[in-house]
Amino acid sequence: MMTALQAVTAFAHEHDLRKSFNKLARKTFGFDFELLYKSGLWNERYHTHAFADDTQIVANVSVSALTLHINQQKTKAIQIGTVMTDPSYQNQGLATQLLQRVIQQYETDTDLIYLFSRPGVESFYDKLGFTAVQEKLFSIPVSSEPHLVPDYRKLKPAVNPQDMVVLLDRYGKRHPQSSILDISDAQHILGFHTLYDPEIEIIELLEPAALLLYKKIGQTMHLYEVISQTRLVWRQIADYVAQPGVTEVIFHFTPTFADLEPLSHTHTERDTLFVNKPELLPADFQFPELSHA
Image (tube, rainbow, N blue to C red):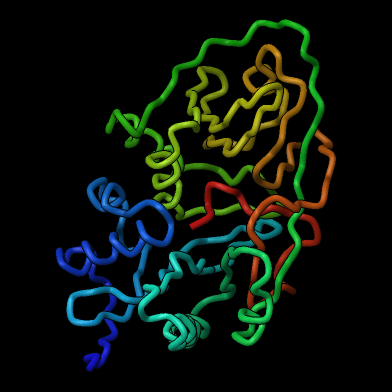
């Protein structure tokens, strides 16, 4: 006979529960959160809400507390993520119960609740009060003619702790680079992506003082983050981004550089965005991909 399940939260420092949580994460997503914990980034902005059978985590919903900048106005938000249920405990409504608890706990003190999930589950989240919203993808063509790329320094925060300190410090002091939609207070998520995705390149520019996070795939430059304490214009970073052989730049955020008019496309190759108050969002936007929990 199965024992009664216990609701548990904030169990990062409880070894047995964290070990079980990581085991379920590996089973569900193919990775665990132990590296995030050891780095100190599993912090007060990442809240776990779970059901446990003794010391076994059997279902979980996590919450990341963030600040959105929508049309240059600060908005208090939470992002839901790490939604998972052990196969042996599925079809009991555990994830639904946890989501309902999270919504009830946060909705009165939060302007926006959102999450990303695979397509095809619209009816599930619709019953919980969420609406699927279509994001945009932005890009520009660039010349592939050879040009001089200014000097820069590469950062490797996954292997150099001091580089992680630099990255998170700069991010914490950054000026939002998009006047339509941007995010702050998401150091733990940014750190997660840089720890777990070795393909992300990070360079520190000498002039202007900025960090760029990107992936160069074939002739396409995928630009993920521009981190600077001042608002930049495109010409200040264009030579760094348009590296030799690059013919296209795809922005994985909402670019609003004063001297740039990107092309806008319907975004069809990423998880679906679900929000509880779609009326708060701008018309054409993309959430920064490195802010996805």
